[in-house]
Length: 411
Image (cartoon, rainbow, N blue to C red; front, side, top):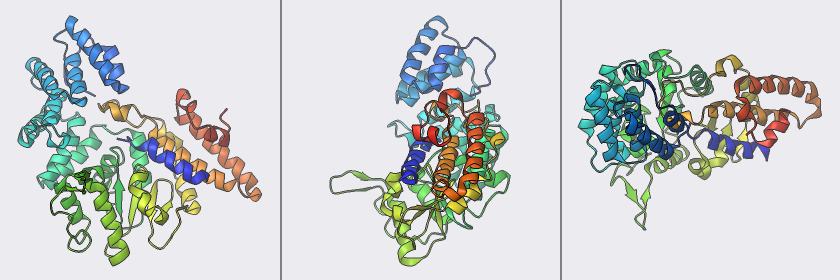
């Protein structure tokens, strides 16, 4: 079934859909940077290492070398080179961010220290408030400290610094506008979580929606906070969830809290009807959804949960309505701005656009099943072929699923 297969591809395509420093101008190690932003970290490390042998005081090389090392869990080495950069430039926000993340308990290093991490990230945004990258960590840290004012400031600064691309903001508006009133939206990526929260804060868009990031639910304090914000009755729906956290099965394998939390929410809806409607971003993969997939309705930008249905389906009327809201001019840019230093996010520049294209393909495939729709099929195909050619780079079009190419006549 084309709809089901395309839905699976959408989830895989979007899973990861999830820099500037204040240093003085100097020659940059271009080869290492190119490898870094392609997420070829070990090759980038080799390139930076060779470059630093000739240019040991190059701030760009030192900071990106340190961050590359941190991302492959060479934390001790990362700290050495980040501190070398700080010795040369004490207010370098990228180096400060790397030191902070090295001590961040969220990443599991045995030498982590929450207070040290917080001290460095606060210094990073003080040194360069226009660098959006450290504001991501400030947002999470502020929530942990129950500092709502700082949490909101971090979300505003992410928006105001230009950390988000126009394309990503448009995609998140599309998601939020598709949702039922007062629902809980579960996300599983970076770029369908932070931008949506920032839009709620800056544009006051769909503040009735509670956004919960599934991966962060593995942090006990975050699970408690989100339970409270979503008005979930923990005594009934999440009874026992916060006891002996984390939990292990009979073979001492950890039972990931995110899936357990979600399954208990679903059970609560079915048994108690105590929770508002819930929806999922398309970044939430089948591993989360498989146990209740027959209760899901695909509408393009999101997936709705309905306990009263018993077959996974698409709502083609809502899908058509949602696709009509898309403007190609909003999606010329890639998913990430030039400021975003995450090689994972930067390596997937068109994931969100692919989600839109697969949504259009699903609708078109259904439309073509009825010969009466011949004229509408031709018009729809023409509009979306133009969208693809305008927004997707040629080299990425060539890698599209063959069936997509045939549907939109791209060959």
